[in-house]
Length: 584
Image (cartoon, rainbow, N blue to C red; front, side):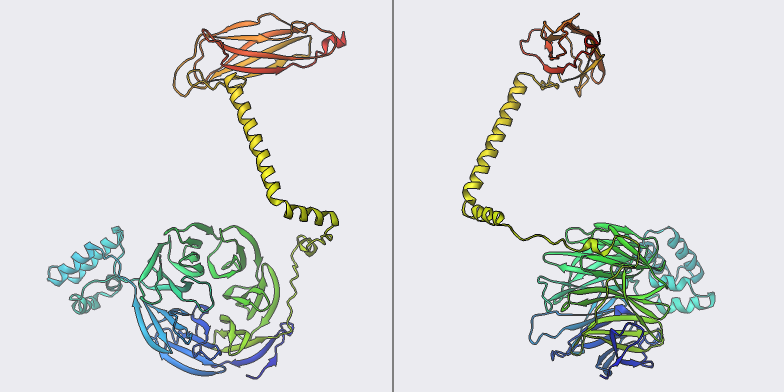
């Protein structure tokens, strides 16, 4: 592969290959890199859309040359390379999602075909076609009945009925004669496909297939038996997905749906765990680390956490055509490649623009990874069918500067923590040597503290020293308000019956205990009327300070019940210093 230094991107990329007439018409979901021969050289696997109605092929490139191609029966919706067993040598299989089927290729030969299970057929639709089969109704009556069913029924019509409704009147009779003897089937199609590690996170670990369907379902398939391991439902049809984790441990499937929302599925639930409502429809979905980057039709790039919390937003100069992840494990570098309609490919890490690549045509698919024996290879296809291969220079360095207003980069720089002092080292050694004794002493002190707190709590309950009654028959609550500057104070007690049942409390009284050398009360003992649940009863009295020394004391309030020696509840009122005597 000959390499020429690329311009317009700061000299970070080498132009390895460009074929403007390669005839590749595809999207990022139909491109993957995999070592299909087990010789350490990765190949480029492409699901070519052809003309859209014919010429669909599975193509494999080695270097700059087309290595092999296989004809596909339908338009490919997605393509992934995955390990389906533990056999040696470790050679991945290729799964191509096309229509309602998944075609699995092993050693570049057809190996297995999986078809999605059929959907439930409308019983009214079956009855109508049965009448046609028996000659009871004509095609015009059939059209009227099918249109009526389509408007009212919960289950959609089959493809056969929908195709019949779209025909002209002259073509109906021929269509009915051709299809009336065949049974009605309703089949969904695959919209997106991904892979999920089965039990280990190893690079060559066995992976399950994860597929999204037009019927708003997500299936997880066993890689060996190709049976459905899990089925999850979505509110709308999925268009893109990103999968992480292991099926046997914990996994997370992030799905962008046709209703403009992003849903997050987890292992323990068959319904979405989180939902992200976007301002416009998503056109790209890429995972970077633990965050998800979404490209939208409003020419914006947005970052979200795994739980759907929005982190940032970057405005782009043109509409997005495609997106892909750029992962360089050898450098610990992760970013997002964004193809734009203005013939540019921009590289973002978070909301920071790191690099811009100028392209001769609009890019329709991007794939980054190991190609051949080169780790940092960027492969792109264009709208005109061209193929571009670029290689990242080993000396390339990306400047992570943020041109947007905000806190400076110095804020994210780690502080220069001073060296450990001798005292710190001595204390660390002491804790290591006496760790067991220190832990026992701590646990002993903690147990004593808990015991003292429990004893104090029991004593407070037994002596009714709390402002709330612990009695189940007389559940009361009381608070006090002191008004005035002195020497005369107004004392208001708000008593409330907190019983849940409509049971009043009666035969109650209030008594005050105070220092008679400091205070004098007009009514030291008062009876309380019947307390109805929920109402607050204010009880008022006046307290006069008789001392001129500028001191204050506590007045204790007891709520008593006739025939009981212990109070129901107790309150301590901290009286303020009388300012009236000082002024006099």
